[in-house]
Image (cartoon, rainbow, N blue to C red; front, side, top):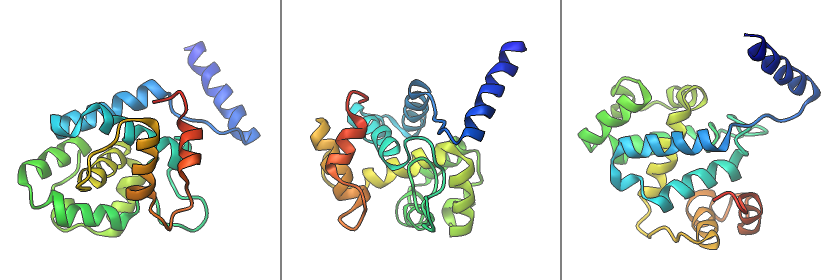
Length: 182
């Protein structure tokens, strides 16, 4: 109990000092793997787990669940509610078995996939870590190109298919933040 209180006190001190806190890498990698395996083995290939982990690292450093500034992105993976709605309407809801697995993983009613609402997904993405993993993975799954497993390949794939040409990120930034971590 004393150790627990000490940890909370240190976290409190870091918070009031403005020091960023982040999630343990092993724990977040395990969560990503658990969610992807529960979606189905085809969603849990090594390169897929790497790109999802790297995406969270680059998008938020596992420190932010809301986009800095006035943007709509939510979760460590900075998924926009409209992206979640698109995943639901055009991919998940038309695959009943996947929809049920997704609802079970997130602990939510399947109705959120059948009639997805941006405000609901805004809340779910901010409050349910697995929702960010799921929508990040589904966004990548819907890309017809294979994921290139090299660090440079992952960086280019992320930039082209996730951050996009309009996004503020760069291949160089991706490589800098992920070096030695994937």
